[in-house]
Length: 97
Image (cartoon, rainbow, N blue to C red):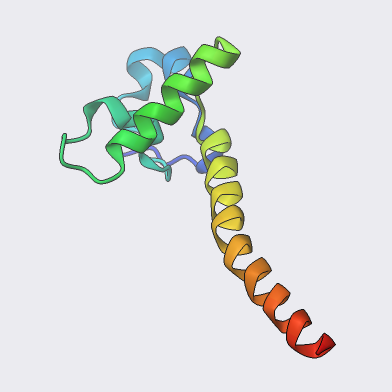
């Protein structure tokens, strides 16, 4: 019978600590923890590997999915806020004239 974990298991340290007992555990997580074994043509592979390398070089520890989620959230906000800021500037200019 498989053992299911929550998203809180998304830190590779838990898997490493469990050793062979972690074999076959199922848990919801993004592909960040397995970036190195993704197919070369996977559209997420390059970004995941870059994030992983940058994070581990800076913090001297393994990545976890939690930092990946935060990175995704900030990236989405940044990408969406730039067009909104431009639209708002145009609206304010129209209102002032």
